[in-house]
Structure formats: C-alpha cells, structure tokens
Length: 173
Image (cartoon, rainbow, N blue to C red; front, top):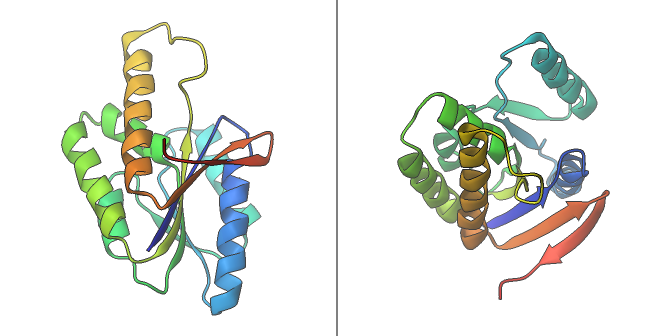
C-alpha cells in the first residue's frame, strides 16, 4: 500500500504533480495508470473542463468515474494498480449536495483507503486558507473539507502540499 495525499489550492499544480508521479510509477510496471474521477458534469463549463482533462491525460490513462461511491472504487483496486483520485473535494461536494450521510461516507472512504493495496495519489483542495465563505453551506463545506483531509492524511503513508507547482513534504507532529 502506498497512499499519498496531495493537497493544494486551486490551480496550484497538485493534479499535474499526482499525474506525473503516477505516470512514472506506471511506466515501470507497463500497466496504464488509472484516473478515478469524481467530477459531475452539472453544466457546460464543467463538461468542457472534464473533456479537456481527459484530452490532456491522453489515451495512456484509464478512467473510472466515481462521483459518489468512491469507497467502492478504492476497494476494487489491486496491488498492480497505479491510481490518481481527483479529487476529494469534488466528491465531498457531491456528497453534501446529494444530502448523503456524510459521516458514514467519510468513514467508509477512509476505511477503504486504509485497506487499499494499490499505489494511489489522492488529490484534494486545501480550502481553509481562503476567506470565510459568506453563506452557511460554504462554511460547512470548508469545515468538512478540512476534516476530510485530516482523516485521509491519518491513513495515508505520505502527504505533500503543492504551492505554485512546487512540493512541500508534510510530516506528522
């Protein structure tokens, strides 16, 4: 098992970093990397964004859509899989907007990561450093994202912060 949590702000380079790491690891195995995508195309801009990301990855990547049941996708991984999960905060949004049982979903997901035999880079946004959101849903999302990142970091083997495309390794206190 090798779970790495990759945190960063919007457009920090976290996804590009995770993808490059997965491509390098996959090249050593001869197996294509797997992208587990959590985005849902709710509007034209998001559909275009998803299409652009697929095009940028190219045909060397396999893609699995898991906007809600990410834990099941993680449980299905094998020791041979090289994976990027992109991203936890979109998964969190999907859970919250669908009014799902968030504590149960987070427990299920962290249990799945803790038992995962694959090599996985888990991408997530660090949203706690920005302005306090002006509405209750935004504030709840910010708080839940911070809690989710802490829970995943607790079961991960490593964590890093990407800022301006540069990596900073994080260490447990």
